Image (cartoon, rainbow, N blue to C red; front, side, top):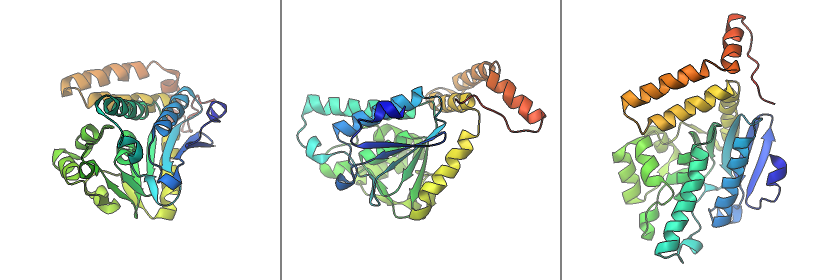
Length: 265
């Protein structure tokens, strides 16, 4: 995977065993999302999904100030109807790439996560924030609306009332408030954020990779189905996973009181 990503300018990828750490690297712009950065993130997560040696991903921002402070306003200010829609669709496609990844993706929100930055975090599976982080969707204060999935993912995560308050005021919230409303899963001191995220990622990596991918898919797909259809989908998938070598290894390891050996090359 690393060789095909060597030309990246705005996104860095590091490996620690089966863990991939993806960093948006535009600190002078507070890691704002421009077209090039969106394209690079899309390429990175496509490569990660193809790499069976990656068990989980941490997504964060370079520097101490920002996770991703939003979209690049200097670019957005020039858009019209057609390129505005195209811009939204490009951002949405990249977010869907992350959301639909077979690998667990953890957002390490190390600073400002505003606008497109919060939308990026919302596309991840789990979110942890530094105590100093600020999170929000301030688009209405600029006369626009969230365009990278914020109006859809935030109410699904936190409920309609919380989502509408954040979106219609445009006001940011602290990390502690984000935890209270369910926007993040936990809060760390800034110096402990990455280590805390790594600990969670390593626990995920210790689990069956096919089971992780299928469980994630069930939650994502089931959110848009009726309970009846979701349970049927779960039952079908439970049958599928029961036919795999991973299932046999997991069962055998439990009965033999040993750690399982998963098929990661």
